[in-house]
Length: 224
Image (cartoon, rainbow, N blue to C red; front, side, top):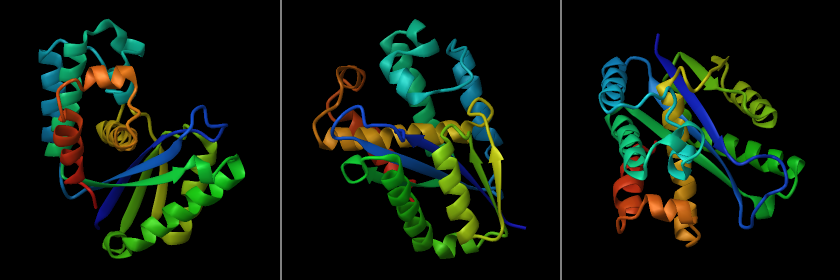
């Protein structure tokens, strides 16, 4: 029995957009369960421990902005932590897709839900052969946003008869953290292209072309 695990993270919310321009992103990380990643997970955790990091969850946005538990670490330490996640993503036999909705075209919950459902449905349909090669599909999401949970349940249930949904905590699944990392990178790609990176983002990726050549080009290799 071939089983596909799908780990999902989002950026944005269904309320009024707090800034213009604004986007809603959903990232899907795919892992064929035939490909074991215990070695990669163990290597990441050993590397973090050896470097003195006492964190369960590498939460990319707060790492960059020096928020939450990451406020106690210097920029050099936080950069090392994000590089560890980049190396983990590079080493894992995973692929991903990201769906983006421009909030200019979705100004309220109803229109955002409709456009998001349509975009996810089109994306999944375009990769039908990939999904149909698996006997079972297990979807992991933390149910952080009820509206997105409802959309995911509807779209996946219509598209696939062999799907199961599981609520999952990012602290327990490194691939949920990978989805968070990739989703954050895709948002940074948009902001970089639009020349509106925040001060904290510019300070974090202070080396010329580092964001594009090191981070974005790396994750591009993982696109489905």
